[in-house]
Length: 401
Image (cartoon, rainbow, N blue to C red; front, side):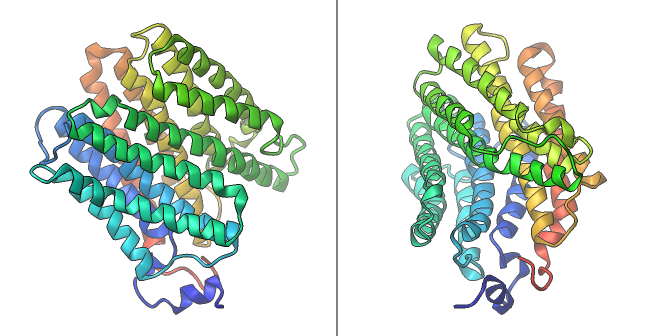
């Protein structure tokens, strides 16, 4: 059986199809920027897409299931071969997966006049095949530890299907069960996978600098308890988003994940933004929980959409951007350090999140804040394409993945 490196060398087609992170990180960033370029004039009524979704539903669906779906694919198609010791998907098989993802974006965007069932089938084809492929690799590699990752991917797929069903019957899908289920799955992915990589990457960086204080090793009993509480909390939030007990559970879960984050010694990583940003991204998990708790227990504190954006744009947006930058550097043989361009895109993303949340707090200047949030988002992901695009599109150095 050929090795991973031999398999990549044997591929003579486009360089972007040599590894899973390449087409999906590139596509995710391009789509994140482009979708926001479309959304800003849609928000002001200056543009209308031929989509059967209402504008807010299209916006929510494409940034959650469109953007995050691509990042998750890029991450898993790169990580699972390392977890299982099996060969990665490369070449035209990878290209077909990427085209299926792109077909979903097009189908949703031009869905006016198309049968809702057909649009759902086209959009759900990609995550369904991805889940089957990842499941096959985990089972074949007997990598039972990561079945939880497959389970979260399946929940994410179910949330997308539910979103389509709610949109088709005219429900407010942007605040429906499908949105909350998919967002909850995304937050759980960050808590589980981020709970492994953040302390591990932090420890590696600190050890190289002979630091005396190191992060607590990942997945201790406290971590397990915090994850169980978060899972229960997310189930309550999906089913009973306005209940007082949901608000109390969100506040409790937020507190536990603040303590979890403190145990990872993030304050010692400020000298290297590539590591520090992982802690910043994870910090949005408890911040989002606190904001949603406040909105439930004291309505009007942030606005529901504003509070949710601490999770959607903050936790998911910043953590995925952090993972994409680090993985791209690592897998293309670059130094694991953040240059000026990388720091700029991190700062732009954080500015975008803060502006969007502020819009829920200060509705009288919401229009200006929405514009600022959109500009920051476009700068972040457009900047990623400019800074990292060449690394993703050119053939990797010999011996590198």
